[in-house]
Image 1 (cartoon, one colour):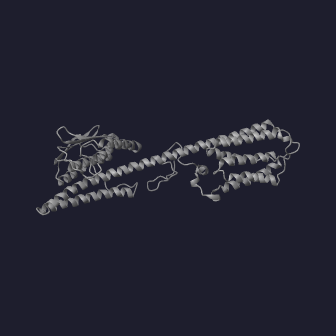
Image 2 (cartoon, rainbow, N blue to C red):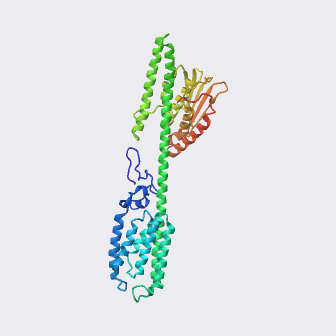
Image 3 (cartoon, helix red, strand yellow):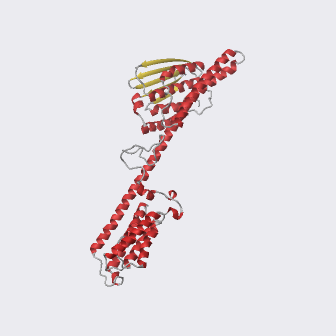
Length: 455
């Protein structure tokens, strides 16, 4: 099982997010230096791989000295030989910055070392590491060319130039040795190609993870925007109506003006409480909400608030009254009714509305009617009411239909499948929300002639 790297609800950058299977999101520790870009390394000589290069240089010097004892026919190591052994690791310091010159420089130093007649040994590790880095960095042709040139130069030395090169009296190299060297080079290239492919998988997985995190952030931002819109639109609409009434009656009917101010106080207090709950969720991600989300059980409160704004609302229920509604569908239904009544208060000349809630086996159906006509008044808002309702319904696999009635009124109908409301999560809900948002944007401009939302 993967370890839990989460903190305050956010996954660790190198965790798999709880997934099992598939490529990891980050390379293993030993491969991260190859995977890092120039911006992730320190500039100058401080950013060079000193530790690994010095360790390789020491290993090559000691190993070549030991290999010399088993090959008495080869030339003994002298100052020039040791210089060549150190030249390969020296150029490897720049293997992550300029891999192409490094791989050819390492191959040239090994070829000169072999041409000078020194003993075979770990000197080949320098060109192996240079080729490995070049392939991983994407310079495959350069790595293949350098190894091919090294093998071709070795063939030339071992089967023709050996007559004029040290050690004296040396014969041609056996073809078995040539085949072994070719197999060694093929193994280096195969391992390099494997790591290059894994590196591409790591990069692709990181890109997918970043895209998924951006989608989740966009969906959460959209959800919060909908929640704040619905809370503020309804409450401020009530406050606006009552403030207008209070101003009109302040001199002629002070008692009625006092009632309007009392309604404003109650509506503003409720709005502040709901906004505080939304903001608390933003401040403490991953924590459970301190208060339950509103649902259709609070429908009488909506009726009272609408009555305070001068709107008479008649509610009816049908279907399976005792059936439990999932929390997501319950919240969506409450907000849809709230937004629809807000639109009636702000944009309809009718002072009555009807709300029908039907709980059927297939899902939850809502119908909100008003007799109209539209006042054509501008609420001064951005017109996101119907779009927000559609997004809420679409996130649960449902639909919203809104438009004028033949008799001059206006109707909003919502259909929310309860099975989807209990099971839709993650990408499915987010994709449905994005589709609904796009559709709502296209349709909202030509719909409802002044009936759109307020904030």
